[in-house]
Length: 73
Image 1 (spheres, rainbow, N blue to C red):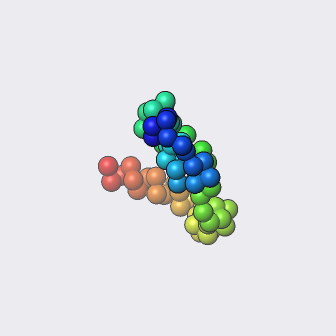
Image 2 (tube, rainbow, N blue to C red):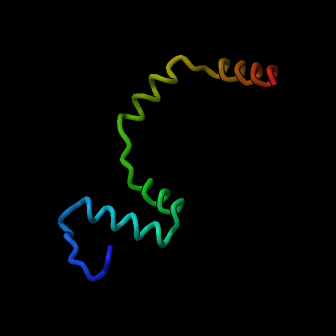
Image 3 (cartoon, one colour):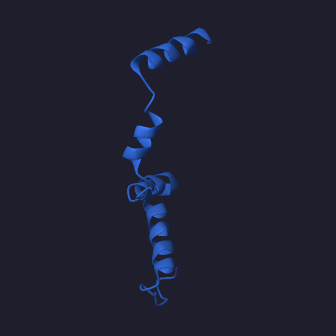
């Protein structure tokens, strides 16, 4: 945005666009993306999801899967 224009700082869309543009200018697109990821809240309950996903996993299963992957290489 042009520095001579009046900026509506109460408009979150405008502020977000200006912020992303400033971050991209200073950090580059990749740096901007990494910076933005720091503020991503994510969604869901990681602990509950992990417990469900790993409920039937045992050390023996892990070791057997490693051996199977190595064998199939």
